[in-house]
Image (cartoon, rainbow, N blue to C red):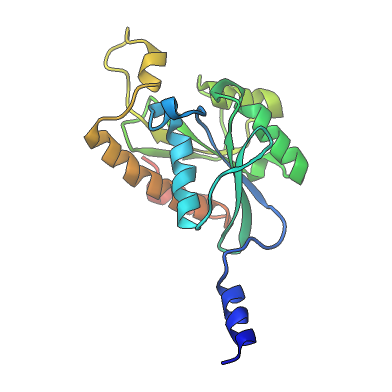
Length: 208
């Protein structure tokens, strides 16, 4: 085998993204180590898991966020972690969509949901923001609500009077952290199906 054959084989096996960006996959959260592994950063955690599976690092700064380009099957995707803080997530998302001229229907948003039990998934093709500030800002910035989303259950507040900010910015205990690890892996499988146009299959398989 010649050296050229070796390079050809490496090239064929490479995960280097090819073609145009077809999907923007945005995981929502807050930047900074103090927010690592908090309930509100469930979206960040899913994207970190997906990037690791693809052999990528989400570390390129653009569109007011951290990004990486990956191939999911034969679909080239932009992974985006907005660094605007949760309430302004839409500013980052819109910049990416506009740059690549991608319609909002080719946007997948991954975020936390306090109405779902820890680790449960809910996939939607569209819908209201449901009071989630990150989704609210994306709806406001795009003027649309027909983008796909994967909601990751982080559990309900211990009681109605419990401070919401304290809850979503709190960290998981050991048992719940294990549930979230599995949930992140399942969410990655959902994303891989969704970019192939198999959202119904993802919903049937993973929706809680």
